[in-house]
Every structure is written in C-alpha cells, then in structure tokens.
Length: 185
Image (cartoon, rainbow, N blue to C red; front, top):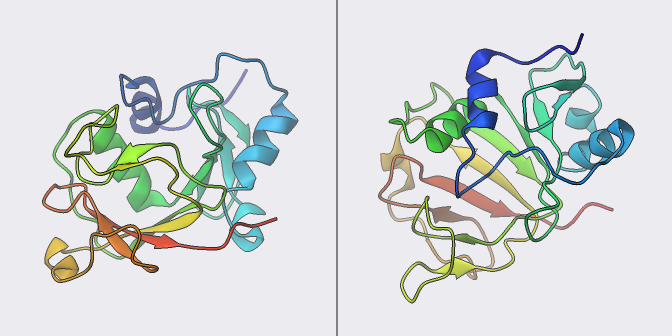
C-alpha cells in the first residue's frame, strides 16, 4: 500500500485547478525518474534527506529532514520541480485552495533550482499573460523566501529583471521573495 502525505498536503495536490501547481503528470514516468527530477530542485544537502511525493501526495521516497520535493509536471512549460519546507507547504495549501494565508512563524524557504513555469509577477491566480500582469515567461532557477511579517518586504524591488532578489505578488497574502540563483548541473 502506498503511503500518502497528510490530508492537508493531499488536498493541496488535488486542489489543482487552472493554476495547477502540483498536478500528477499525465505522461508515465518511472518512479526513479520522478524522484531524480524532484530532487534536482534543491541543493544536495537538502535533497539527500528530503521526502519525495507525486502530485497526488503519494510518497515516492521517505525522507527525514522535513523537506518535500515534487517533480516537474511535464504538462506545463519548462522544468519546474520544487522542494518545500513546512512553511511553504502551508503557503501552497492556502494558495491552491484560495484560503487566507497564515504567515509563517519563522522565515521559510522553497527551492526551484531548475527553473519555473511561466507566471504572473503580480497576480497569484493569473493563468496567461495580459497587458498588465507582468508575465514572466522564464523565471529561471531561484530560491523562494517567506517572511513572518509582510511589512518586512516594504521598499524591496518587485522587478524580476533587477539582477537580484525581488518581491513577487506584492500586496497579496502570497507575497514572497524570489532570489535568482545559478542553475545546478
């Protein structure tokens, strides 16, 4: 019998609608390929001991460090596996289920070191480019950071082309810092 993650995480994964962050890929991939892809999202020190789950919340590999890595959805453009800590899992649950976001008690991190799928820089629920949603076609590899108080982000750039960290989705409960990084090999 397959082990699944908590009901909160499972509901997050199954809540995929138009935004579809964590859906189960329609194309068949081996478990080994899914695990390898998921772990490519984070530095080795985190990936080595992370849990790996598919989009339905099925655990593909047990971990021991509190991180959960998810493979890319090949139905979406780009290669965007991710590794999330507890704060980011709660954030993703709130975002996917359109619930109010409860700020994390501490700074929280997520890794997407292979890159990102196309997304809006201003609208958490945009599914396509518009004239005013600052569409980012290729987010590139990055670390994501949540802070306990969104006021901490005031005065920080929202420009994804500024050459450094920037705030994505400012003015929403889902604002977070995007920190561009070099791509891992």
